[in-house]
Image (cartoon, rainbow, N blue to C red; front, side, top):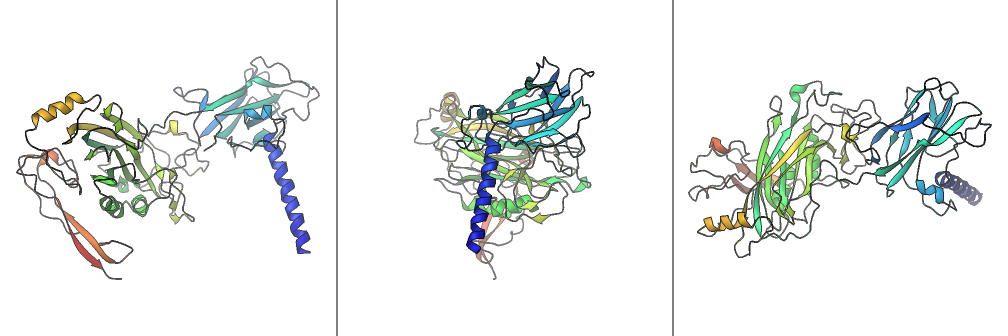
Length: 518
Protein backbone atom coordinates (compact mmCIF):
# COMPACT_ATOMS: atom_id res chain seq x y z
CA UNK A 1 0.00 0.00 0.00
CA UNK A 2 2.76 2.42 0.95
CA UNK A 3 4.61 1.52 -2.27
CA UNK A 4 1.50 2.33 -4.36
CA UNK A 5 1.04 5.66 -2.64
CA UNK A 6 4.71 6.45 -3.18
CA UNK A 7 4.45 5.61 -6.89
CA UNK A 8 1.32 7.72 -7.30
CA UNK A 9 3.10 10.61 -5.54
CA UNK A 10 6.07 10.30 -7.88
CA UNK A 11 3.78 10.31 -10.92
CA UNK A 12 1.97 13.37 -9.60
CA UNK A 13 5.17 15.38 -9.12
CA UNK A 14 6.50 14.24 -12.50
CA UNK A 15 3.33 15.46 -14.23
CA UNK A 16 3.42 18.71 -12.28
CA UNK A 17 7.10 19.29 -13.12
CA UNK A 18 6.46 18.51 -16.81
CA UNK A 19 3.61 20.99 -16.88
CA UNK A 20 5.79 23.67 -15.29
CA UNK A 21 8.63 23.07 -17.74
CA UNK A 22 6.21 23.26 -20.66
CA UNK A 23 4.75 26.49 -19.32
CA UNK A 24 8.22 27.97 -18.96
CA UNK A 25 9.56 27.01 -22.36
CA UNK A 26 6.65 27.44 -24.74
CA UNK A 27 6.10 30.95 -26.07
CA UNK A 28 3.11 32.52 -24.36
CA UNK A 29 0.05 32.89 -26.59
CA UNK A 30 -1.18 36.37 -25.67
CA UNK A 31 -4.33 36.26 -27.81
CA UNK A 32 -7.11 37.84 -25.73
CA UNK A 33 -9.57 35.16 -24.52
CA UNK A 34 -12.58 37.22 -25.64
CA UNK A 35 -11.16 38.12 -29.09
CA UNK A 36 -13.25 37.30 -32.15
CA UNK A 37 -10.47 38.37 -34.55
CA UNK A 38 -7.74 35.76 -35.10
CA UNK A 39 -5.05 38.27 -36.11
CA UNK A 40 -3.97 41.46 -34.28
CA UNK A 41 -4.49 44.89 -35.80
CA UNK A 42 -1.57 47.17 -36.72
CA UNK A 43 -0.61 49.22 -33.69
CA UNK A 44 0.88 52.33 -35.42
CA UNK A 45 2.10 53.77 -32.10
CA UNK A 46 -1.36 53.87 -30.51
CA UNK A 47 -0.34 51.76 -27.50
CA UNK A 48 3.12 51.67 -25.97
CA UNK A 49 5.06 49.60 -23.44
CA UNK A 50 8.02 51.42 -21.85
CA UNK A 51 10.55 51.08 -19.02
CA UNK A 52 10.80 54.12 -16.73
CA UNK A 53 14.40 55.30 -16.53
CA UNK A 54 16.50 58.19 -15.37
CA UNK A 55 17.76 60.55 -18.06
CA UNK A 56 21.33 59.25 -17.84
CA UNK A 57 20.40 55.55 -17.96
CA UNK A 58 21.05 53.52 -21.08
CA UNK A 59 17.70 52.73 -22.68
CA UNK A 60 18.30 49.18 -23.89
CA UNK A 61 20.09 47.58 -20.92
CA UNK A 62 19.20 46.30 -17.46
CA UNK A 63 21.17 45.84 -14.26
CA UNK A 64 20.85 42.45 -12.53
CA UNK A 65 18.62 42.13 -9.47
CA UNK A 66 16.98 45.53 -9.83
CA UNK A 67 13.37 46.70 -9.86
CA UNK A 68 12.10 48.37 -13.03
CA UNK A 69 8.77 50.11 -13.53
CA UNK A 70 6.91 49.07 -16.68
CA UNK A 71 4.28 51.43 -18.08
CA UNK A 72 1.63 50.25 -20.54
CA UNK A 73 -0.43 53.15 -21.85
CA UNK A 74 -2.46 54.56 -24.70
CA UNK A 75 -1.10 57.59 -26.52
CA UNK A 76 -4.65 58.72 -27.36
CA UNK A 77 -6.96 59.17 -24.36
CA UNK A 78 -9.99 58.73 -26.57
CA UNK A 79 -8.78 55.18 -27.31
CA UNK A 80 -8.48 53.33 -23.99
CA UNK A 81 -7.87 49.57 -23.76
CA UNK A 82 -9.92 47.08 -21.78
CA UNK A 83 -7.65 44.02 -21.56
CA UNK A 84 -3.90 43.52 -21.46
CA UNK A 85 -1.19 40.93 -20.85
CA UNK A 86 2.53 41.52 -20.19
CA UNK A 87 5.05 38.67 -20.35
CA UNK A 88 8.79 38.56 -19.61
CA UNK A 89 10.52 35.76 -21.51
CA UNK A 90 13.62 34.36 -23.14
CA UNK A 91 13.67 35.45 -26.81
CA UNK A 92 15.11 32.04 -27.75
CA UNK A 93 11.73 30.50 -26.96
CA UNK A 94 10.69 31.53 -30.50
CA UNK A 95 13.12 28.96 -31.91
CA UNK A 96 12.21 26.13 -29.58
CA UNK A 97 11.10 23.06 -31.54
CA UNK A 98 10.75 20.75 -28.56
CA UNK A 99 9.89 22.40 -25.28
CA UNK A 100 11.74 19.69 -23.37
CA UNK A 101 15.06 20.34 -25.09
CA UNK A 102 15.83 23.53 -23.20
CA UNK A 103 16.52 24.19 -19.54
CA UNK A 104 14.44 27.09 -18.15
CA UNK A 105 16.49 30.23 -17.55
CA UNK A 106 15.89 33.04 -15.11
CA UNK A 107 14.39 36.08 -16.82
CA UNK A 108 13.27 37.82 -13.66
CA UNK A 109 9.72 38.17 -12.43
CA UNK A 110 6.77 40.53 -12.84
CA UNK A 111 5.12 42.04 -9.78
CA UNK A 112 1.63 43.51 -9.49
CA UNK A 113 1.12 46.52 -7.24
CA UNK A 114 -0.79 45.85 -4.04
CA UNK A 115 -2.88 49.00 -4.48
CA UNK A 116 -3.68 48.31 -8.15
CA UNK A 117 -6.77 46.06 -8.61
CA UNK A 118 -6.48 46.29 -12.41
CA UNK A 119 -3.89 43.51 -12.72
CA UNK A 120 -3.37 39.94 -11.57
CA UNK A 121 -0.93 37.10 -12.17
CA UNK A 122 -1.85 35.08 -15.24
CA UNK A 123 -2.83 31.44 -14.87
CA UNK A 124 -2.39 30.99 -18.61
CA UNK A 125 1.31 31.79 -18.99
CA UNK A 126 4.38 31.71 -16.79
CA UNK A 127 5.96 35.08 -15.82
CA UNK A 128 2.91 36.98 -17.04
CA UNK A 129 0.50 39.57 -15.65
CA UNK A 130 -2.91 40.23 -17.17
CA UNK A 131 -5.97 42.41 -16.78
CA UNK A 132 -8.18 41.67 -13.79
CA UNK A 133 -11.28 43.41 -15.24
CA UNK A 134 -12.71 44.74 -18.51
CA UNK A 135 -12.98 48.40 -17.56
CA UNK A 136 -11.42 51.11 -19.75
CA UNK A 137 -7.78 51.80 -18.99
CA UNK A 138 -5.43 54.53 -20.15
CA UNK A 139 -2.44 53.55 -18.03
CA UNK A 140 -1.15 50.45 -16.22
CA UNK A 141 1.97 50.14 -14.04
CA UNK A 142 3.71 46.80 -13.44
CA UNK A 143 7.11 46.12 -11.82
CA UNK A 144 9.75 43.79 -13.18
CA UNK A 145 12.56 42.45 -10.98
CA UNK A 146 15.47 41.66 -13.30
CA UNK A 147 17.28 38.30 -13.01
CA UNK A 148 20.07 38.14 -10.46
CA UNK A 149 22.59 35.68 -11.91
CA UNK A 150 21.05 34.60 -15.20
CA UNK A 151 23.40 33.54 -18.04
CA UNK A 152 20.99 35.11 -20.53
CA UNK A 153 22.30 38.31 -22.08
CA UNK A 154 18.91 39.38 -23.49
CA UNK A 155 15.37 39.23 -22.11
CA UNK A 156 12.13 40.26 -23.80
CA UNK A 157 9.19 42.16 -22.37
CA UNK A 158 6.11 41.66 -24.54
CA UNK A 159 2.60 43.10 -24.18
CA UNK A 160 -0.79 42.71 -25.83
CA UNK A 161 -3.76 45.08 -25.44
CA UNK A 162 -7.34 44.80 -26.58
CA UNK A 163 -9.73 47.67 -27.20
CA UNK A 164 -12.68 45.33 -27.61
CA UNK A 165 -13.53 41.85 -28.89
CA UNK A 166 -12.77 42.76 -32.52
CA UNK A 167 -9.59 44.81 -32.07
CA UNK A 168 -6.36 43.86 -30.31
CA UNK A 169 -2.70 44.78 -30.74
CA UNK A 170 0.76 43.31 -30.14
CA UNK A 171 4.39 43.66 -31.35
CA UNK A 172 5.85 47.02 -32.54
CA UNK A 173 5.82 49.47 -29.60
CA UNK A 174 4.56 46.72 -27.30
CA UNK A 175 7.80 44.68 -27.34
CA UNK A 176 11.08 45.59 -25.63
CA UNK A 177 14.43 43.78 -25.82
CA UNK A 178 16.84 44.48 -22.97
CA UNK A 179 20.51 43.48 -22.74
CA UNK A 180 22.27 42.72 -19.47
CA UNK A 181 24.45 45.65 -18.43
CA UNK A 182 27.98 44.26 -18.50
CA UNK A 183 29.61 47.48 -17.36
CA UNK A 184 31.42 47.21 -14.03
CA UNK A 185 29.43 48.40 -11.00
CA UNK A 186 29.92 51.99 -9.88
CA UNK A 187 31.51 50.83 -6.62
CA UNK A 188 34.23 48.66 -8.10
CA UNK A 189 37.91 49.05 -8.90
CA UNK A 190 38.87 50.35 -12.36
CA UNK A 191 41.08 47.30 -13.02
CA UNK A 192 40.36 43.60 -12.46
CA UNK A 193 42.45 41.59 -9.96
CA UNK A 194 45.68 40.08 -11.28
CA UNK A 195 47.38 37.09 -9.71
CA UNK A 196 50.92 38.24 -10.49
CA UNK A 197 52.08 41.86 -10.37
CA UNK A 198 55.15 42.62 -12.51
CA UNK A 199 56.00 46.03 -11.03
CA UNK A 200 59.52 46.28 -9.56
CA UNK A 201 58.72 48.90 -6.95
CA UNK A 202 56.46 49.63 -4.03
CA UNK A 203 53.90 52.40 -3.69
CA UNK A 204 52.68 54.45 -0.76
CA UNK A 205 49.01 55.48 -0.74
CA UNK A 206 46.66 57.71 1.17
CA UNK A 207 43.08 56.51 1.46
CA UNK A 208 40.26 58.80 2.59
CA UNK A 209 36.75 57.74 3.63
CA UNK A 210 34.18 60.56 3.36
CA UNK A 211 30.67 59.82 4.64
CA UNK A 212 27.61 61.26 2.88
CA UNK A 213 24.72 59.46 4.58
CA UNK A 214 22.23 62.04 5.87
CA UNK A 215 18.56 62.86 6.09
CA UNK A 216 18.90 65.02 2.97
CA UNK A 217 20.60 62.39 0.82
CA UNK A 218 18.69 59.33 2.15
CA UNK A 219 15.45 60.64 3.67
CA UNK A 220 13.35 57.45 3.61
CA UNK A 221 13.22 55.94 7.12
CA UNK A 222 16.30 57.86 8.18
CA UNK A 223 17.03 56.92 11.85
CA UNK A 224 14.81 58.64 14.38
CA UNK A 225 17.75 59.37 16.70
CA UNK A 226 20.41 60.89 14.43
CA UNK A 227 22.61 61.74 17.42
CA UNK A 228 23.37 58.01 17.64
CA UNK A 229 24.35 57.67 13.97
CA UNK A 230 27.90 57.00 12.91
CA UNK A 231 30.53 55.00 11.08
CA UNK A 232 32.93 52.56 12.67
CA UNK A 233 36.69 52.80 12.24
CA UNK A 234 37.77 52.25 8.68
CA UNK A 235 39.72 49.01 8.90
CA UNK A 236 41.41 46.94 6.21
CA UNK A 237 44.73 45.92 4.75
CA UNK A 238 46.98 45.97 1.75
CA UNK A 239 47.32 42.33 0.85
CA UNK A 240 48.23 39.67 -1.67
CA UNK A 241 46.10 37.79 -4.18
CA UNK A 242 45.81 34.88 -1.73
CA UNK A 243 44.07 36.90 1.01
CA UNK A 244 40.41 37.91 1.20
CA UNK A 245 39.04 40.21 3.88
CA UNK A 246 35.49 40.00 2.53
CA UNK A 247 33.89 39.16 -0.80
CA UNK A 248 30.46 39.15 -2.42
CA UNK A 249 28.78 35.75 -2.33
CA UNK A 250 30.86 34.32 0.55
CA UNK A 251 30.01 33.96 4.26
CA UNK A 252 31.10 36.79 6.54
CA UNK A 253 34.09 36.01 8.76
CA UNK A 254 33.78 36.26 12.53
CA UNK A 255 35.62 39.58 12.35
CA UNK A 256 33.30 41.06 9.73
CA UNK A 257 30.26 39.77 11.64
CA UNK A 258 31.34 41.57 14.81
CA UNK A 259 32.19 44.73 12.88
CA UNK A 260 28.93 44.84 10.89
CA UNK A 261 26.71 44.07 13.89
CA UNK A 262 28.47 46.00 16.67
CA UNK A 263 31.02 48.30 14.96
CA UNK A 264 33.72 46.37 16.86
CA UNK A 265 36.99 45.95 14.94
CA UNK A 266 38.96 43.85 17.42
CA UNK A 267 38.60 40.45 15.72
CA UNK A 268 38.96 41.64 12.13
CA UNK A 269 41.99 43.72 13.07
CA UNK A 270 43.59 40.75 14.79
CA UNK A 271 42.99 38.59 11.71
CA UNK A 272 44.79 41.16 9.56
CA UNK A 273 47.76 41.29 11.94
CA UNK A 274 47.99 37.50 12.20
CA UNK A 275 48.11 37.21 8.40
CA UNK A 276 51.03 39.63 7.92
CA UNK A 277 53.74 37.98 5.84
CA UNK A 278 56.50 38.95 3.44
CA UNK A 279 55.42 36.25 0.98
CA UNK A 280 51.64 36.79 0.91
CA UNK A 281 48.76 37.54 3.21
CA UNK A 282 48.66 41.11 4.47
CA UNK A 283 51.28 43.85 4.65
CA UNK A 284 49.78 47.04 6.12
CA UNK A 285 46.97 47.37 8.62
CA UNK A 286 44.72 50.18 7.35
CA UNK A 287 42.99 51.95 10.21
CA UNK A 288 41.11 55.24 9.98
CA UNK A 289 39.32 57.16 12.72
CA UNK A 290 35.70 56.38 13.55
CA UNK A 291 33.22 59.14 12.80
CA UNK A 292 30.07 59.63 14.86
CA UNK A 293 27.50 62.40 14.99
CA UNK A 294 28.13 65.35 14.82
CA UNK A 295 31.42 64.56 13.03
CA UNK A 296 29.99 61.99 10.59
CA UNK A 297 30.96 64.06 7.58
CA UNK A 298 34.55 64.56 8.66
CA UNK A 299 36.92 62.45 6.52
CA UNK A 300 38.75 59.46 7.93
CA UNK A 301 42.36 59.09 6.72
CA UNK A 302 44.84 56.24 6.56
CA UNK A 303 48.07 55.40 4.75
CA UNK A 304 49.42 52.10 3.51
CA UNK A 305 52.05 50.52 1.29
CA UNK A 306 51.70 48.11 -1.61
CA UNK A 307 54.27 46.01 -3.45
CA UNK A 308 54.39 43.34 -6.15
CA UNK A 309 53.22 40.72 -3.63
CA UNK A 310 50.73 42.86 -1.69
CA UNK A 311 49.24 44.73 -4.65
CA UNK A 312 45.59 44.84 -3.52
CA UNK A 313 43.71 46.42 -0.65
CA UNK A 314 40.37 45.85 1.08
CA UNK A 315 38.56 48.01 3.66
CA UNK A 316 35.28 47.94 5.59
CA UNK A 317 33.30 50.53 7.55
CA UNK A 318 30.17 49.62 9.54
CA UNK A 319 27.02 51.77 9.38
CA UNK A 320 25.28 52.44 12.68
CA UNK A 321 22.44 51.99 13.30
CA UNK A 322 21.75 49.04 11.01
CA UNK A 323 21.18 45.29 11.35
CA UNK A 324 24.53 44.24 9.81
CA UNK A 325 25.21 46.71 7.02
CA UNK A 326 28.61 48.01 6.02
CA UNK A 327 30.47 49.93 3.31
CA UNK A 328 33.76 49.03 1.75
CA UNK A 329 35.99 47.84 -1.06
CA UNK A 330 36.99 44.23 -1.68
CA UNK A 331 40.18 43.06 -3.42
CA UNK A 332 40.82 46.44 -5.02
CA UNK A 333 43.64 46.05 -7.56
CA UNK A 334 46.39 48.69 -7.52
CA UNK A 335 48.81 47.07 -9.99
CA UNK A 336 48.13 47.89 -13.64
CA UNK A 337 50.09 47.41 -16.85
CA UNK A 338 50.71 51.17 -16.84
CA UNK A 339 52.19 51.17 -13.32
CA UNK A 340 50.73 51.74 -9.89
CA UNK A 341 47.25 53.24 -9.92
CA UNK A 342 47.71 56.95 -9.27
CA UNK A 343 44.30 58.12 -8.06
CA UNK A 344 40.71 56.94 -7.94
CA UNK A 345 37.47 58.10 -6.34
CA UNK A 346 34.80 55.45 -5.78
CA UNK A 347 31.21 55.78 -4.48
CA UNK A 348 30.18 53.33 -1.77
CA UNK A 349 26.80 51.63 -1.35
CA UNK A 350 25.67 49.43 1.55
CA UNK A 351 26.42 45.70 1.79
CA UNK A 352 24.65 43.12 3.95
CA UNK A 353 26.85 40.77 6.00
CA UNK A 354 24.06 38.17 5.99
CA UNK A 355 24.22 37.50 9.74
CA UNK A 356 21.24 39.49 11.08
CA UNK A 357 17.69 39.98 9.78
CA UNK A 358 16.28 43.46 9.36
CA UNK A 359 14.89 45.56 6.52
CA UNK A 360 15.60 49.05 7.88
CA UNK A 361 18.20 50.93 9.88
CA UNK A 362 16.33 50.53 13.15
CA UNK A 363 14.71 47.14 12.56
CA UNK A 364 14.53 44.85 15.58
CA UNK A 365 17.50 42.52 15.35
CA UNK A 366 17.20 38.77 14.98
CA UNK A 367 19.85 36.28 13.98
CA UNK A 368 19.69 35.06 10.38
CA UNK A 369 19.31 31.27 10.44
CA UNK A 370 20.84 29.85 8.39
CA UNK A 371 23.40 32.56 7.77
CA UNK A 372 23.34 34.15 4.31
CA UNK A 373 26.31 35.08 2.16
CA UNK A 374 27.51 38.66 1.81
CA UNK A 375 25.29 40.51 -0.65
CA UNK A 376 24.08 43.99 -1.43
CA UNK A 377 21.50 45.39 0.91
CA UNK A 378 18.20 44.64 -0.81
CA UNK A 379 17.99 47.56 -3.22
CA UNK A 380 14.61 47.56 -4.95
CA UNK A 381 12.97 45.85 -1.99
CA UNK A 382 9.21 45.31 -2.17
CA UNK A 383 8.99 45.68 1.60
CA UNK A 384 7.46 49.11 2.20
CA UNK A 385 9.42 49.42 5.47
CA UNK A 386 12.73 49.35 3.60
CA UNK A 387 14.69 52.57 2.99
CA UNK A 388 15.28 51.21 -0.52
CA UNK A 389 11.66 50.39 -1.37
CA UNK A 390 11.27 49.95 -5.15
CA UNK A 391 14.53 51.79 -5.79
CA UNK A 392 17.29 50.97 -8.27
CA UNK A 393 21.01 51.14 -7.56
CA UNK A 394 21.32 53.91 -10.15
CA UNK A 395 18.68 55.89 -8.24
CA UNK A 396 20.45 55.49 -4.90
CA UNK A 397 22.81 58.24 -3.83
CA UNK A 398 26.19 57.07 -2.48
CA UNK A 399 26.51 56.59 1.27
CA UNK A 400 30.16 57.61 1.13
CA UNK A 401 33.17 58.07 -1.15
CA UNK A 402 36.53 56.37 -0.99
CA UNK A 403 39.34 58.51 -2.37
CA UNK A 404 42.62 56.77 -3.13
CA UNK A 405 45.78 58.69 -4.00
CA UNK A 406 49.35 57.56 -4.65
CA UNK A 407 51.88 59.57 -2.63
CA UNK A 408 55.11 58.05 -3.90
CA UNK A 409 56.65 55.12 -5.74
CA UNK A 410 59.90 53.77 -4.30
CA UNK A 411 62.46 51.41 -5.83
CA UNK A 412 63.18 48.00 -4.35
CA UNK A 413 66.86 47.32 -3.86
CA UNK A 414 68.27 44.69 -6.21
CA UNK A 415 65.65 45.07 -8.92
CA UNK A 416 65.59 46.92 -12.21
CA UNK A 417 63.04 49.62 -11.62
CA UNK A 418 61.46 50.05 -15.02
CA UNK A 419 57.76 50.14 -14.24
CA UNK A 420 55.89 51.33 -17.29
CA UNK A 421 54.68 54.88 -17.08
CA UNK A 422 56.64 55.63 -13.89
CA UNK A 423 60.31 55.38 -14.88
CA UNK A 424 60.98 59.07 -14.31
CA UNK A 425 59.52 59.06 -10.80
CA UNK A 426 61.43 55.96 -9.73
CA UNK A 427 64.68 57.22 -11.24
CA UNK A 428 64.36 60.49 -9.38
CA UNK A 429 63.87 58.66 -6.10
CA UNK A 430 66.95 56.53 -6.79
CA UNK A 431 69.12 59.57 -7.44
CA UNK A 432 67.98 61.24 -4.26
CA UNK A 433 68.76 58.25 -2.05
CA UNK A 434 72.42 57.91 -1.06
CA UNK A 435 71.99 55.06 1.37
CA UNK A 436 70.10 51.82 1.38
CA UNK A 437 66.38 52.18 2.11
CA UNK A 438 65.67 50.87 5.60
CA UNK A 439 63.28 47.94 5.76
CA UNK A 440 60.02 49.23 7.16
CA UNK A 441 58.16 47.30 9.88
CA UNK A 442 55.35 45.16 8.58
CA UNK A 443 53.40 45.00 11.82
CA UNK A 444 51.00 47.95 11.53
CA UNK A 445 53.56 49.80 9.33
CA UNK A 446 53.66 52.55 11.93
CA UNK A 447 56.61 54.74 10.89
CA UNK A 448 55.66 58.37 11.26
CA UNK A 449 57.27 61.44 9.81
CA UNK A 450 58.65 64.74 11.05
CA UNK A 451 61.73 65.99 12.84
CA UNK A 452 59.76 66.48 16.06
CA UNK A 453 59.39 63.15 17.85
CA UNK A 454 56.77 63.78 20.52
CA UNK A 455 54.38 61.04 21.61
CA UNK A 456 51.46 60.53 23.96
CA UNK A 457 51.64 58.21 26.93
CA UNK A 458 50.94 54.58 26.23
CA UNK A 459 47.23 53.79 26.14
CA UNK A 460 45.82 50.94 28.21
CA UNK A 461 46.40 47.35 27.14
CA UNK A 462 43.67 45.93 24.95
CA UNK A 463 41.63 42.93 26.13
CA UNK A 464 43.40 39.59 25.79
CA UNK A 465 42.51 37.90 22.49
CA UNK A 466 43.00 34.10 22.63
CA UNK A 467 45.01 32.66 19.78
CA UNK A 468 42.35 29.96 19.29
CA UNK A 469 38.80 29.65 20.55
CA UNK A 470 37.53 31.60 23.51
CA UNK A 471 40.20 30.95 26.13
CA UNK A 472 43.83 30.01 26.62
CA UNK A 473 47.02 31.80 25.60
CA UNK A 474 46.66 34.95 23.51
CA UNK A 475 47.98 38.42 22.78
CA UNK A 476 47.12 41.94 23.85
CA UNK A 477 48.40 45.21 22.44
CA UNK A 478 48.76 48.81 23.48
CA UNK A 479 49.45 51.88 21.37
CA UNK A 480 50.45 55.50 21.57
CA UNK A 481 50.05 58.46 19.22
CA UNK A 482 52.29 61.09 17.72
CA UNK A 483 51.54 64.52 19.09
CA UNK A 484 52.73 66.36 16.00
CA UNK A 485 49.64 68.11 14.59
CA UNK A 486 50.97 67.76 11.04
CA UNK A 487 49.74 64.15 10.94
CA UNK A 488 47.00 64.18 13.54
CA UNK A 489 44.43 63.30 10.87
CA UNK A 490 45.87 59.79 10.73
CA UNK A 491 45.00 57.16 13.28
CA UNK A 492 47.85 56.14 15.56
CA UNK A 493 48.00 52.79 13.74
CA UNK A 494 48.78 54.16 10.30
CA UNK A 495 52.13 54.91 8.72
CA UNK A 496 52.35 58.58 7.76
CA UNK A 497 54.97 60.16 5.45
CA UNK A 498 58.61 59.10 5.77
CA UNK A 499 60.50 60.04 8.93
CA UNK A 500 63.99 61.16 9.73
CA UNK A 501 66.45 58.63 11.13
CA UNK A 502 66.17 60.19 14.59
CA UNK A 503 62.46 59.31 14.80
CA UNK A 504 62.34 56.08 12.85
CA UNK A 505 63.00 53.72 15.76
CA UNK A 506 60.17 54.95 17.97
CA UNK A 507 57.42 52.33 18.00
CA UNK A 508 53.72 53.09 18.24
CA UNK A 509 52.56 49.62 19.24
CA UNK A 510 53.65 47.00 21.75
CA UNK A 511 52.34 43.48 22.22
CA UNK A 512 52.62 40.96 25.03
CA UNK A 513 51.46 37.42 25.78
CA UNK A 514 48.42 36.94 27.99
CA UNK A 515 46.04 34.24 29.17
CA UNK A 516 42.23 33.97 29.33
CA UNK A 517 40.86 31.53 31.91
CA UNK A 518 38.48 28.90 30.56
